[in-house]
Image (cartoon, rainbow, N blue to C red):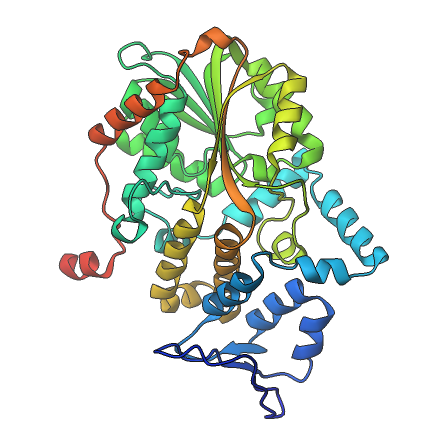
Length: 416
């Protein structure tokens, strides 16, 4: 580590082989104090501002994964060493940030998801799935596009939409993103889907996709808060939504979806989660990436859903899948550095790298997983065994065509 004044410090022992040592430079006289004062916030900001530089051949991802591989838990020591007042202040700030009234919920959604379309095209798969991909085989040999198709098949199978019997059924997709899952459900089952979200460009893009596919009369997308949806639906899906609801609003979410679901209906939820007890969102993520966001523990979800009248029929913990997804998003972001910095600037680009690498370490070395939960009102709504999930998922994987990422350099070169 080289300080701003040129002083160099060496730590640890050489690993041997071809492993080059991590070389870090602090370029500003305030960098060390800023990081030490608050490690999680300070390190992220120092990297964004160019105060902390990782020299090639390594990068910020290598640094974060190296540090957290040693501890397996990012920030726990720092949190334990904080004084009571600071810990209490952080807890209160995180809780306050999780209050998502209608006005703040829309503002937070726009902050997180209303960036330029071109940005998301550079690192997401062709279908713009901005949630965990499902790697059924070797992640090194599985494309992101294949893994995202397998994720949609796995989720759809849990909705128990039987082929030949589902046509005309009504599905509500809460937090529909860019519309990929809603369009997939209609394509595979002929169901009518209403997708709702709070980011204007997501909804505009999703409706454009439905129009282009000629299914706008069957798959609709509305800029609507889920709390304002009316009617009854045979199935409800929420993929990547509960992280943005806020713990104080969990009772409201489950009460509303319970009201909207038919008596023999099925609801499936897919979200990031904590493998341990409830916690709090770190300040850097709250400030720069997901204001109002919080990753829930399983106990928080089950407790509130039961109060609303739901019965939890299936729970699956998805381990490490998101780490591989985030690694691919990171690599694709690096691949398009010049284009992304042209859209925004170097500070934004470094912020995005820190976000993706930081998230990856949480799912690779930390205690984060993804939860998939299946809810019903009536236990007779689904078969007695889980066989139908594997069988239908396999059928869908055979039926679905895997798209090719059009921003792959080889594909772009061939097109040109």
